[in-house]
Image 1: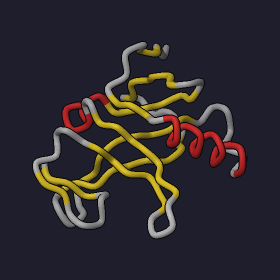
Image 2: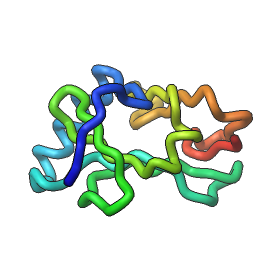
Image 3: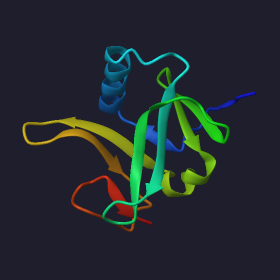
Length: 115
């Protein structure tokens, strides 16, 4: 049985939500998939972010943000609590950015951090 928590550990900005809904539609992501947010070891600074559509896994916690199912491994929340994910679409930069208050340092790529 899966339960959906109402209080989410992360924030998706309006720009990020808009882009994620576009990606889900354009890539015909099945309805049983959700947005996986997490971390993995590696990257320039020790950890890198996981952001992509995936099937639910056994240890996932589920959240719903603006009609989007979001999944996260419970153990990842200590690294991501309070994080904001935004999407920028500028002339020199385009993509998702991670504003993580738990990051002690980040590298220039913007997708790697140290906690």
